[in-house]
Image 1 (cartoon, rainbow, N blue to C red):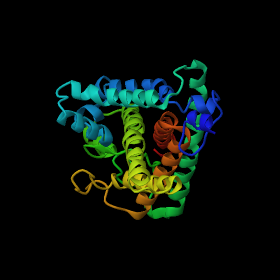
Image 2 (image 1 turned 90 degrees about the vertical axis):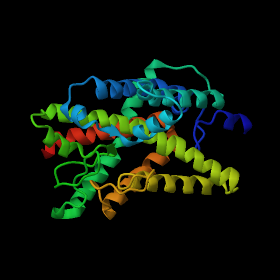
Image 3 (image 1 turned 180 degrees about the vertical axis):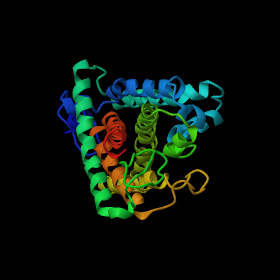
Length: 302
């Protein structure tokens, strides 16, 4: 029994040693699998010629939080832009070391991991379509851009929040922005949200909540998991409507019960996925959901 738990890679289940599920739950797999996403987000933010990003200086809120935190610790200037992705890698390496898991990596697992993330994103796509239909012609949950601003039933909600306003409104203000550039801007920010929102609200927050409930308050493991998942999901949803650091409401995304409910459900889904499959698959699923959502929006709703 002790050896079994030694090789556990998740909070809820213990997978067979060296199986696909066990291997791909390791932090080292998360680093290698997510590295292309991290690079794409960084290159896309600085190097891709998108007027939407260049004019509005839009950044994923969770990325900005990490950046501000690291700046306060002395990472100034250009280093502040490099520090958040380095923080992701350092945290995952630290988890890999402390977990005692094997460092061996099989390259052939990358494609199945990508396919798994795409398949795991499908339930959220179905949920958004259901909620959009259920909301009716009023369109209460019909569209949320990357900052959560609501418009008519013309898109699928993207699970990301950005600083600087609405991508869709800023696209209109930019003038002359090609649809392909707007799509690319949404994909860039969607990928960044997949990584940094999962880092903040799942990897960091859930671990801290588990320490609080299980180690400090001495609650059972099961109760600690349930409370951690629900609280992290609620905060994940709330941060689209309010700046959790200063308490200021988001004027571009006023509170709406249905929108809050959808994001809470999505937060629970990602939290449970994190507890079962680890950070790499969860962040990948979040990123692929955003990519699919904006792609469907451009292809079918606009």
